[in-house]
Length: 300
Image (cartoon, rainbow, N blue to C red):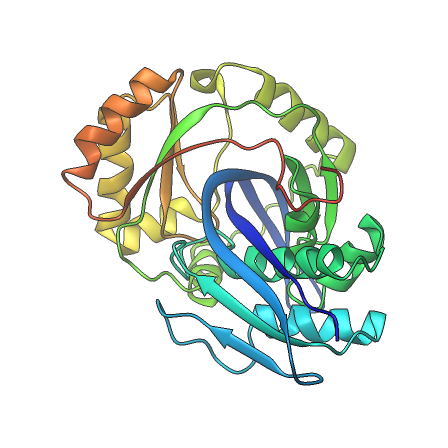
């Protein structure tokens, strides 16, 4: 029987930019976004154990449903490779669920990449990204891990190039802003607006994001379509953004559909000073820096 164990870090992401476009015929909205990994992560260990096709998933921080991103990753890997060895997965959950950080998708993608290494399965980056779609539409980004322009419903990914390891502070106000709820609020806010605006090409959007990303953070024109409606519904989100700005953040925004918010700083000293101030006001406060890519990425 094969035996072995691998330790995995599953970093979450922030959306430096998120433009939500029209609803597609399949019910999903089209997005244009800049995804970026940060150094705030869950920790996972995966070990081979006795028992064909068995899976023991341990997570002490939260109760996981039977169908979860880790089980989907394991099932996809087994179906693709035919490797049925029993597994024990220990997940230490630090990234809050439902915070717009993609923690669940990152966990699943990390397990998928970890299994590929643990069993020397030899799956290519493209094969892993295709398999990860069974985890979630944003999971292919976590397989690649580089700062990327993400479009479609999240399945089209184009890396921007060299990452900038800027420091930041992340706040989670403790508000659960569901994705479906956020989209419904956004659609409601747009109801009655039938104006047809010129649509830039994907290449134009990529060029815009690339140029903005190269500028100092206080010059960024990034935005999140969800922020006005979510911060309007939940005052704690608005307060968190105001506190980040007051603490000296050069750029601050909400991630995904919320409710976590983040601030980007020009240097580690400024970020550390802000973290000290904000951690005394907010229970869920984390310091981070922007990552080049995930340690489990096939490109690493």
